Image 1: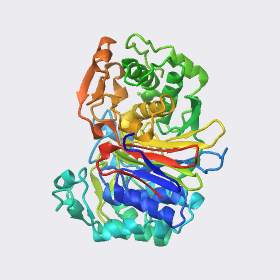
Image 2: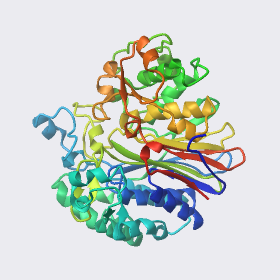
Image 3: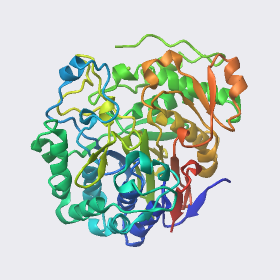
Length: 511
């Protein structure tokens, strides 16, 4: 068994061992899985700005732990400011939202409202106690990870002196902001230094009332039955429906006896293609009825076990961190938080040094599109957390990954390995992966017929996929294929978990 860790009274998995340790500390203080998730994410907002932070968005799924408990979903994704003007962008010659260094691709960040919403409903420990490790690391310094260190000269600011792994990085503005949130709640962020700086940087993109509107909404999660379990994800504006559609398709196909068989990769890749080819046309914050038995059956009929299929015409077309926590009472939290691209927009709120996401790249600039860039709208999101329950409603697993458009594809592979093939978390997470190729990580479905199946080093399927008509390319084993984490609650009540070895410094820690 590769990389699987076991615990009895709670477990946390994240991309950074310092963050996972803060989550376990929260459990030791008597906190819930929600408290542990907040503490973990707060540290990541300090140590992993290339993946996430208070300038980004957040989604979470929560199972309360009791058998038959209701799964809840928290959408803390930001909305475009009152100054959003698609006509101006089109007049400037833009056909798509600007990718970097343009404030118009920066919706008001929802992360902090997400923390506060999660804590208000499920927290047991005072918020200030949860974020104390994050405040200390920001103020006193933390050692740069191998993934962060190469970025110092690129982004400057707090990171200008960082040249190698282990170099200490201090983020005093982030420390002040965390302390302000602990004292004043959301006013310490949206009405404090950060909010004032964002209004100035926006130069009309935002109005004060945009920052005054809470961004965390409890919404109904979506689910699908697959492999004898219910798999849950976020509703739109998340692309979680792609995971659910693909799982529904795969559940009705005849899978091979081993995931090393070419047919495993072929059928899952085809399920992903038929689930996602029309995402740009369908996904917007008010989309409904995307996952039905009839729709799953229609798309399953497009899968040919013997060859790569042609896709029908459209029906109407970065960076992230995932973490999960389970407490001793069985509560599970599946939380994903993101900047979109690495370091997001490459814009920094100047007073606090908090980098801003660029989730606005999900908006459309097609006039009249349901996801057109416009004031108050939420953009389509790639973020796809997942939570799995048994038929009796008890929690089985929390799982998720970074990976932009590829998130549903990566999760499809891991969940199938876990539920269909019975692999332990470490084996399922560490196994080589495929993904459908993308130039930026966010444009896979702009040309769905031309997608290449990119294979991670060590994957056994290259020759077989080529013979079935798939264009195939090879990439090294590593972050290009996501950082996935998984906690599985065993029948005994103990937890088995794995942090992705691709993250280099990730950790699954328990108590």
